[in-house]
Image (cartoon, rainbow over the protein chains, first blue to last red):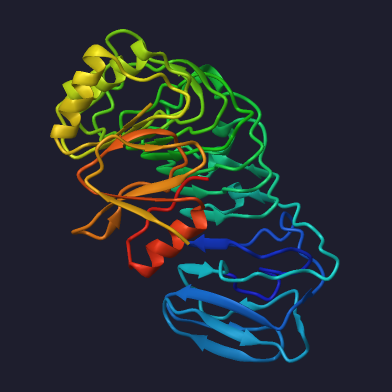
Length: 317
Length: 72
């Protein structure tokens, strides 16, 4: 395994390093990460797994302990634009840093994951990452955490074929999910896509592997489909949208954490929701139906009381 | 700084300005993110209500609760 095996493999420069976490074999594509000049600052923190030796770029080398944060102080007040690890590792984590470049330059990054054939986890949060290319070739990536960047277009274009978890909330995604389906991502367990207010579209078809769905505040609308085929689903957070609940709507017993608050649901739709969860038969769950939704009535109130008697936390208007 | 702490809330009313969360006392675990959702809440657990999210975060820290990060 070869990771960051020469001084040019990674450069820190005119950017704010607030979240770079790379796991598995990596050959850093410097042409796509436009780091340049040294950054102002006097310390840099790194965590590696397993133990590795780092050349801090100022002539000092140090053996880093496994899974421990190590901070190096630069006496010059500047962190060099390159350094290297002489012993390959599996994980190199720079997330503990809050570096500020002298000119407050932005990152403007594009990652080519096609050039990272063994990469399993990509964790780049809080940058101004504008694109990720080559995702279809990145068959080993399981986890994509790219929240709070500048990714536009649609969600699917950032999902490698074997994605198990994607965290993509707080990006300027501005297109609905193509063909309204993510079913082809047959390993997908978690999709956390909240606060994509310009995404729109309707609730997509998902693979049966799905466990957690997060589409809160995504500008989505249309009736929610029956969820009974998602027998692994345990969390559904779709607050602050404009979804509807059709007659006979049903949920799996595995679903015990639901947030449908602020969807402008009518009393009839709130009643259908409460009845669906009561009928599923699970205990000790949590459901939020408050906000701008209407209050339950009749059979909905009966279902609400039944859920409470089964240990549920229930919030309604 | 004022919290309202309700054991086993039964249709406890909150407005759309208040922040609140529910936690499991025996597990000391927050069972869902901090909410700012109006309505009436019933639960077998502990409900904590405050005027600001920061107050609740302090409560969570002071009481060593296991916190579920929210999605915001």
